[in-house]
Length: 226
Image 1 (cartoon, rainbow, N blue to C red):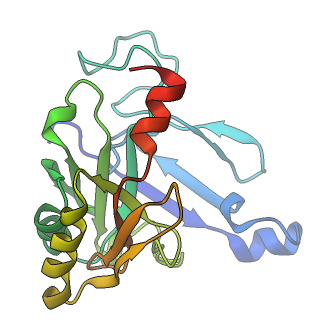
Image 2 (cartoon, rainbow, N blue to C red; image 1 turned 180 degrees about the vertical axis):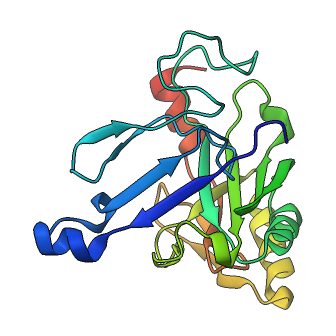
């Protein structure tokens, strides 16, 4: 990679909690950035709390500070703010890629490796103009910047959702998932607008809902137009 990274994160919960009891754990993190790329490949274009509790700017992708005068790295960028990705930590990135390519319409878009671990992007090939991707990150145990934090799992209600075009598609995906041991909920008719759904578990226990006739497309066209 031309743009490797280091994302060193030190956690000072004990001292901070003594000084500021009750302060949320998310605000006790000190993030040191070497102005390199995050393992997930997502730009660090946000603000985080520094050690004193103030907002401090993060460095974006690349080797320059926010607000620097030089131009962007990538030619193609959104012209308006866009929702672009969801990120998950995984235990085995190869197993996760294989699972999502087997049971969902997602396909591998990119993968990378650096001193923190492995990263991958998955998405749908027909969404090149308005991509929405699933980011997978498998961190090495020795360099995991989040190893002090619990591993997040989308369950039991939190989930990813995929709508299928035919009712029979729900039966088909459930029939494939059951012998693979990842069917979490069999096909079930739910009240509108949820529709006819089944639930699968990915290799890390994250729930993925498959639905038919959920109404997302109908409502989007009704409110936002075709």
